[in-house]
Image (cartoon, rainbow, N blue to C red; front, top):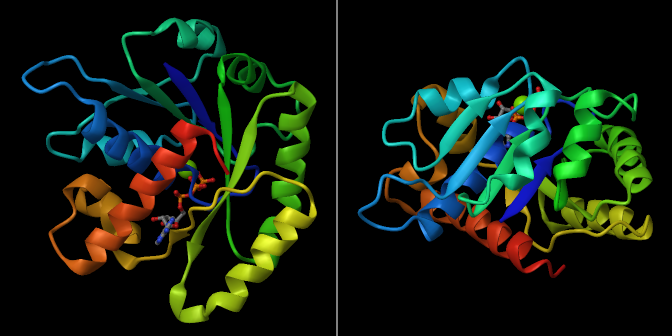
Length: 220
Ligand SMILES: Nc1ncnc2c1ncn2[C@@H]1O[C@H](COP(=O)(O)OP(=O)(O)OP(=O)(O)O)[C@@H](O)[C@H]1O
Ligand SMILES: [Mg+2]
């Protein structure tokens, strides 16, 4: 069982989007047929509860979602071995203080911290501060570029990739591309595994499948 904590002090980088969709593709791949027992748990520790609000709107949600604001309740997270994977969505400010009780509990439970960021200069400083907090706990982490629009051209992506690698931060090979279908998914009550069948959905879904595989194998 692996616990993944999605963390970045910057708001709007895709923490909730990655939590919900990584949970969905992992559940699709690991769920035993003909059983009520679900293999994947998503936990939202964000009081705003976007991941919870979103998941509750989805019919036949392929994973279990729970909202948890009390750090004490999360102490046993890594003992929930009946799940194959647990994905934790966090609020933007988490980690800003470094010794907040919630971040402490999550850093104790985490097998891997996933730090989504955007291919935008403004995302750099908060991402750097987030990396510092995670490094101070000595937890393995990986940065993931989310929201790259292929219409902006490869150069905008390469610049961001080089900036991140130049810092010596581990960077996922998989890039989560920007698609409008992701932006609308929460309101439409869909996760990436329940997008309609078309080319865009296929591409959008395959980004998350690749990322889940990359995170599970730990090779970047
Ligand atoms: N790859 C993507 N393509 C298109 N839209 C995206 C993508 N990733 C995220 N978004 C959209 O960007 C917005 C911010 O994403 P999200 O809510 O996941 O970020 P967050 O880091 O959880 O933000 P917060 O810090 O406020 O909790 C949302 O409207 C979401 O739908
Ligand atoms: Mg969020």
